[in-house]
Image (cartoon, rainbow, N blue to C red; front, side):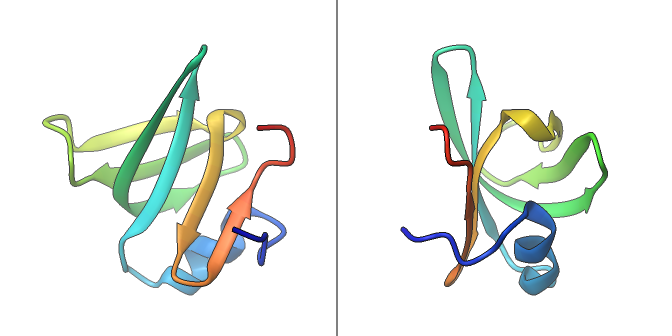
Length: 79
């Protein structure tokens, strides 16, 4: 997928409450989430995970590798 957004905020703003695909890294592991993003701050991304038992999540921005909603995609250059 080609980057069509320069930052996470552009994807979230365009999503307007729709489900967003979020890829998060934790060490060497990668985990994909189908989520509704609640808010994005300068340090964290807050979202509701629809696939997991713990629905409310807070993740550091640096750990988010990819955010996609439809044709809007943000991906870090160093995957």
